[in-house]
Length: 261
Image (cartoon, rainbow, N blue to C red; front, side):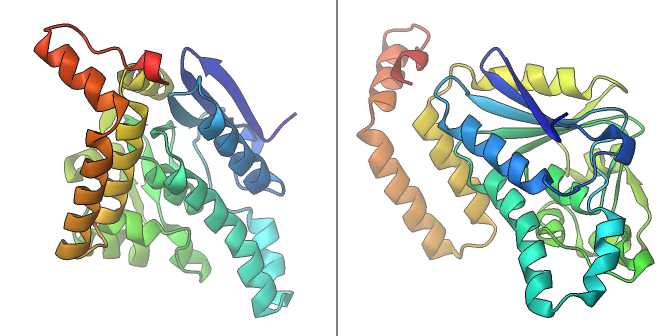
């Protein structure tokens, strides 16, 4: 049985974390399989979007505590090496040119929060939660969790999550704007798949550029972001996608971006 399973549903690649007996924690082999699956989806011209979910009743519990316990005997260089496996997984989502949507049932904990929030859009079912309980075991957040959450919530809320380590339920996260859609219990994956259909006839190059713009907007200063927007607009204006989009608008017909993929 593979730790990461995938299937095509229309033009969406459904990537499933498949270790339900351990709440889909990041056991040995997780990161290699996840990154390869994301890369395969990114390179497949038939994949227009990717949905990430977890098998069973929990999205992802983060790192495997049994493995984490052994790291105290490692050198610092060895610890960096193992943490860079997680970083590679987060970066694979961040750098993917296609929209990635997380579908969360039950909850996400630790690095599972990083995995969920690394995605471009987040669907979460009612009665689910996020938990950054690192502090309760003497650790600190990783996987860019504090970066992603700081982009969606006030510092006081982030401090509560990270310094107290309690569960923050989906309805509160939705009110904060940390998640896009609050789904009925048991319906997160189906809701995410429905959401992914929005990308079935949108321009591939435009989406990729917009993803980069939104990713970099929070860290760039005004001048850097203005230049990046200008560079991408220059490229987009010379693209066949804009020719099709503008012609379709002027001719009062639906644009057909699929033929350009």
